[in-house]
Length: 341
Image 1: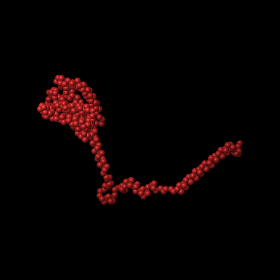
Image 2: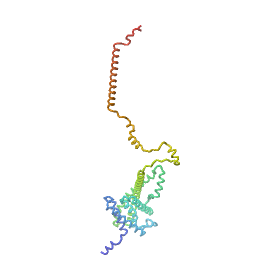
Image 3: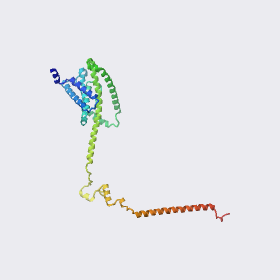
Image 4: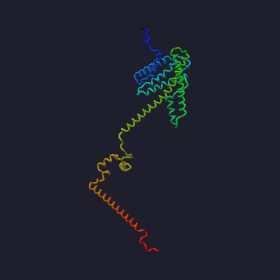
């Protein structure tokens, strides 16, 4: 009983912290329920708390030194290099929308710390992502270019393909070594290879996550800037319209010469229209409406004109027919007998 109570009271050791936080990360990534659920978020917070405690313990123990090489680190201690990567992965799983930008920046910092540490120990050959200062300089330099750097885009694509192939190969090798290492049957060489493969696998994951984080940060900052622009635009629309004014040298000149043109606008077009409509001075209001008698008289005149046109048409047709009949009974030259030879 006393030994059990002492085990409960003593603080957790570094291997226990690492394994528990790794298990929580695996459960969060492999969970079928939504990441925003309460149970998953509790695991995320618990894992981050354990990882922070483990990072403080590593710092107190001076487990790693920038003056030593990768070969000088013990095989059982290599796995603790992955703590910043685990911190970045769990930080991305937080779902507080109001702090999303802060979470992205913290996760990027964790991943970048892990990559920097791996590059210092020459765990693998890769290029570090650009920091804020480097990215700002490259953006200003790239903005002056008219076309994107197609060579850089092609090299990035090739690097992604290469990382994907290496990831598949490492996963196959890890699955082959996992059972022997976890059971304690593997020798020191295989244990070292197992942890180095995990380090290289997380290098590829960190590079991909940083690329996704940079894209999401750009989108979030663009949304914030658009909101600020819309807010400033709405505030300008709420302002009352300014009254027209005249720029003159002095008040006397303004009284004598005026504005330099006939007059300033004193009302809008709609105000002018309403004022003239009230006085009945609009064009459609000035036309007198016809009475019923005038309408009848106009109708009769139109009917008389139509009847007269019809009679004229009949008379013209009758004359044409009579002329045709006369030509049938009187051949050409009829009655012209004086000039006959």
